[in-house]
Image (cartoon, rainbow, N blue to C red; front, side, top):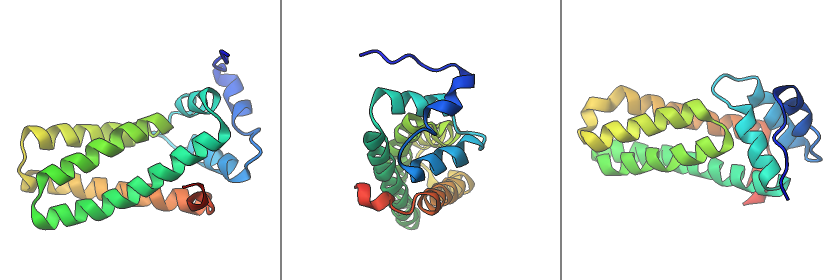
Length: 151
């Protein structure tokens, strides 16, 4: 059945009514951050279910941690393809959950590396990506301590 997309004024009433307090804390925290698109998250929540959103978030968080580890290894090995795959994989997941800025940055880095696979040309960008992915994962785990139980 079709669920209407709430108007901006109604957005705050949509997800915070969740029965899962950690999801509410997640929404409240990231809703106040720039780079997080509230409406995208609300749309996912309305189109699926609370449990589905939490499971997607849990897998995204695991992918963030895996990306940090794999990207650090790829840098040490000067493996541009592994860095490209890592950034590419996270871009879509981040966008699905509303992390629009992170998704945009990851997608742009992915395109740059794929077009010119010389890892030394992107040391700063890759370092920034690793830092952002690690910090995002930490924030998710602090706000949503039971997230691993949804894997």
